Every structure is written in structure tokens, then in C-alpha cells.
Image (cartoon, rainbow, N blue to C red):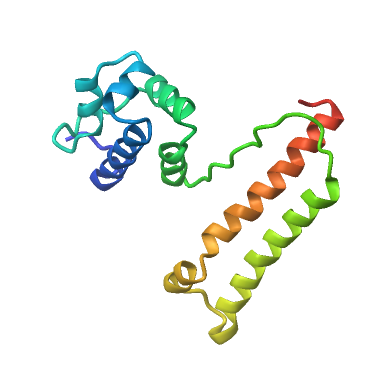
Length: 160
């Protein structure tokens, strides 16, 4: 048996996320129209009954772009000990810096408040507190708001 860094569970989770992506595209027929592969092949990519068949990266990107649904990319980032942070859709100059800064500060404060709430009772954060207080979601939201500011600053600074 060949060693693979991903587990059976990891690969099954990716297949499950891919099935959701195909559904969000409107189903296999619509997904096939957005990619270079047919319905049957898309079915095999998502099927637990075909554990050795996985979606090629170009097909994944075609569907991700077509559906504007990055859940499979997010799952892959988590498996790689990373996080997916979407860039803002508009690349133009920001017209309301105070509002964008306010959003970033508020989302950061929401994340910090949830963390402090979790730490308040015993100085530790449990998996249950992470889930109950939605700490990961609040941190992701804060990061996304900062990325929006970073993207606008790059645009003004000429970095594109």
C-alpha cells in the first residue's frame, strides 16, 4: 500500500464537497456544460463508490468560477492547514473608506469578544466553545474584511 498524506476521510470529504458544488451548479447536466467532462464522469468524481477517481483541478476551477462557490477550495485549504480568503469582486477605488474600516474593526471586535467570552470562565477554549460562539466564522469574517481593505489599498497604491 502506498502512503498518502490525505486520509480516506479527507478524500471522502472532498468528494462530498464536490457533490454539493455540482448541485449548486444546477446538477450534472449544467456542470457538464461548464466543464470539459460529461455527466457520468462528474458523477464518478463525486461518488464514494469510485474512491480512486477525483476531479481534475481545471474542472474544479471551471465549476468554482461558474457557480461562484468556493466550498471545495475552502475544504482543500483546511486540509492544507490554510484558509481561503475571497477577494472583493470590485477592483475599483473604494468610495467609503470609513465604512470599510468600520466593518473591519467591528468584525475584528466580534471575533475578539467571542474569544474573550470563551476564555473568561477557565482561561481555555474548548471545541464546544469554538462551535457555540462561532469563533471560526467570526475570525474568517474579520480576515475577509481586512482583505477588502488590503485590496483597495493595493488598488490605490498601484499594485492591482
